[in-house]
Length: 302
Image (cartoon, rainbow, N blue to C red):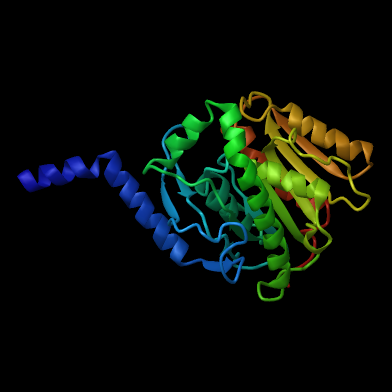
């Protein structure tokens, strides 16, 4: 009886739940293919020797996150029947963590159902110094000036990782039955900033074919001139988002409209930072419809 009681208490504890979810996450990740972005150490972080980890985040996320990424990778999620379209996912987390469940695996599974091959980018992050990286991030957000200073060098590294990822996916296109002209990028929050930055300032060797910034901030993008061959945009955000003011999404859309480039904007009255609840959570259905409308999903599977 004592053993059963002890087991019951452990089973219903937060620690047990964290261990259970972490074990499930590790087992699931082990089934996925992983592409290393660099042959050796990533440039600029050669001396980083801390270990990458995953854990269950506290409120309001309450989902799995990754932290202490030192060696950037792409985790591949393949559909049963690939249709040639690929999306590189850049999750958010203020460059402290990666929201790999809510903005990563959950999104990947929905896109897989539509035949889209997904590459979840694990880009370099600020080093976590405690065993609670989520709380570290939440504390860092309380001082915007210090947060910007800590994020500045990581933003540069993360952008390097994203550009490398686009080139890498295009390099592996045939291997994953991908049309090299149907490779897009999607980002959330900090990841939304990254993909919006690429939309404005893409490199010739790493140009995405479409870009989807989801609840992004663009105010710190240095060059906001829309190029003549700028990719089409899909944008989604919520009016009540306190972390990424909806004005950013409106300005991004306006820039594309002024340049006479294709863009679609979805604004929800409620949904907050994360587009949770109905109808905001249906944004991904609108994205799939947009892919069809743009002609990316009209071709038969390769």
